[in-house]
Structure formats: structure tokens, C-alpha cells
Length: 296
Image 1 (cartoon, rainbow, N blue to C red):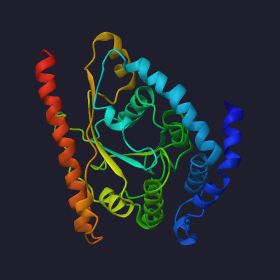
Image 2 (image 1 turned 90 degrees about the vertical axis):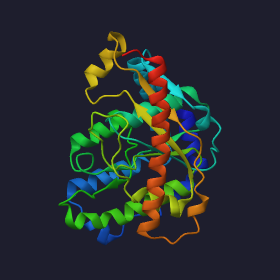
Image 3 (image 1 turned 30 degrees about the vertical axis):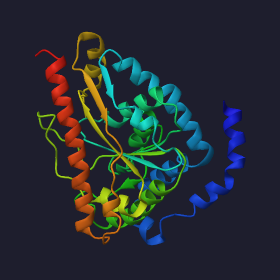
């Protein structure tokens, strides 16, 4: 396996060189502290070339296995054929609701184990903790195999650090524009919804609309339910009768009507709101399925 990965790196060196040409300006990287800069450059390196292929192999054969072991008695998956039949030559954005720390990790495990398409994962993430703390770097490695990239410093109080986000937007648009097998996991809500109602949603944030308008990727909605934020409880529930985990993959969303519109905040928000409507429709399908199949 390792030899095969190393051999591929030579054949793809020109592609990697072109990709690495997109780097932050001195003004953008200069607003970060020493630890944040180190975390950024380390994680960035892990998301290119031979390293990215190695970590993707780990995701497919190691990461997906432990998630499967922890959820197989509870897992219910619908519409996985929409992922299988998507075009692997074009980047694919998965837009999903967000209620658990483990949402996208579980979705990625299902895709690795139930499809045969090429998969190279990227999860844009808030930089706080994952990039400003070595423990956060470790969590990125253990949980995401370094795929929590690119980072965004958009939290209130970050001040000048938001300047770095201009680079992250450019980088995310690049990832969503080109790349065989690229799958990008994105939560339009921007943060976890902590409501007890799993069919409620937070307002959509416009950032995803800007990325889609500029990159024009494939987009598939995903609704996720049944996952909690307590990892030991979640794992034990697989054998102790925990809540059923449901993952619904919708059909590709036709967003062509938006692509001729002005690149403005209003258009970005319109796209984001439309995405949340598609996710909500999947939620209603889940509500009907639960009423028919789960006795309360």
C-alpha cells in the first residue's frame, strides 16, 4: 500500500505544484499567532499530494471501520445511490444539518463502506481549538485524519484574524471547483443546533452560497438524526438499544438558476436558504419513516 501511494506521488507532482500555488498573502498569514501559523502550515501539508492520499487510505480502511463498529446496530441509510452515481470527476459538496460533533465523520464512514466512487474528503472548520492548540491538531488527526481544512477565524472577537478568512474562502472555492473525488462536507447552519427538536434548524449562513456561486460544484443535501455528542454513550448505545441513526442522502440539487445572478450577499443567502429547504424536506421524510417504523 505505502509503495503504491509513493509511486502515485511522482505522477501527480505537477498537479500538486499547481494546487500549492494558492497560498495566503503575507498580510493574511501575518494576523495569525505562531501556534496558529504552525497549525495551519502543518494541516495544509497533510492535505496535499502523497500525505493526502495516505490519510485518505486511513480514513477508508481504519476510520470508517471503527465508526461502523460503533453504529452498525443502529444505522439506517437512505439514498446512498445518489452518492454512488454522482460524477467523481467533479467536486461534490454535501450540505447537512448539524446536531452532533460526529455528523460528518459518520457520513464519511457510510460513503467509504457503501460506495465504490473515489473519495477525497475536506471539512471546512472553525479554527478555534483545531488550529490554535496542539491538542486540537491531535483531534484533527485522530478524528478527521487531518481533513478539517481549510480553517475559518470568523468567531466574534477574533478581530484582525478574520482577514485570514479571505484566503480560506479562495482555498475552499479552489477545492470545490476542481479535483477528482473531492467531497466537501459543509453545514449551512454554521454551528451545532442544540435544540431538543431534531427537525428544527438554525438560519442558513451565506458563506456556502458564495462558494457554490463561484465554484459551481455538484451539491447533495443530507439529513442526519440520531447521533449524540456523548461519545461513550453513543458507542454503548449500539448494543444497549440507543436511538436509531438515520442518514438521508437527497438527489443532486439543481442550482443553475442562481449561477447567472450577481455575486452578492443577497444571492449567497438565497442559495443557502434553498439548501436548508432541501435538507428540511429530507427531515420530513425521516419524520414519516420514524412514525411508521419506530414505536415510541
